[in-house]
Image (cartoon, rainbow, N blue to C red; front, side, top):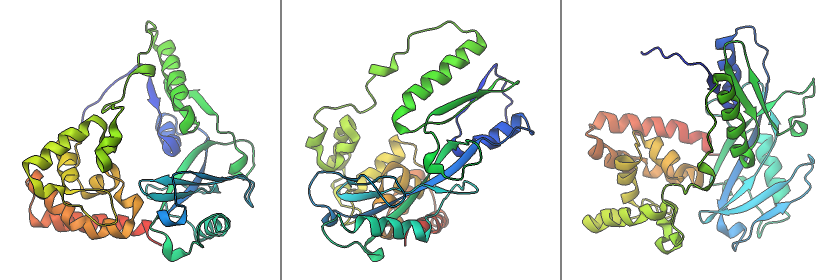
Length: 307
């Protein structure tokens, strides 16, 4: 354990930022009103084509969207106030029912519970406003708070404002510390793997320029071209790549955080967990006990994505 001292610490812990704030000041009031939103994944047959769909007015006054996603259809979302944020949040039955009933009039065929390939949940770190219990009406603007110990907390916001959030947080931190201002180069900085012609790589297009390196792995060992599952767009080579170049250490790392297998089809992800564990064990020098433990741990997590 190392002790690190800093002139300012940025707390960007999302729904858990109150816990960090209370480490700095145990008397700090909670500012987060957590709200969860669920997403259901279906086969492409429920919305053929490449166009997304938005339902502009739902029974709770929000919107619902259906978006083509990795040859599946992603439908969401809800806005449900919750008492406490969990590391592995779970969808409520009424949320699933709400999405199924709202979407049924707009899809190519009637969606049923048994058609859901995966259900997953995100939690919004909304900032409290008075005593209202309706999180759908809370502002999505972000908030910055600086306490006496120079703990800078940034919370609220949304995906589409992440750059502005980062800019505001860093600017405030620079001001606190008294650092010299510099122009940020990140706005026009290309992300790793940037490739304008990525579509030519088919299922490997998500890797961008790195797809060529994965193809090289396959050329060296053709068996790695084998698909992990007929209902998923991933091959064995991607597991090897995840371990060697993306620091994957667990089966959950590979099937949830490097690929989207768990989010696309939870049942299929459970079925390929043994294969993923065996390949990873060979790469990492692990034994059969590790393989069994990894499969069990992944299955335990994956069950939360099944209905």
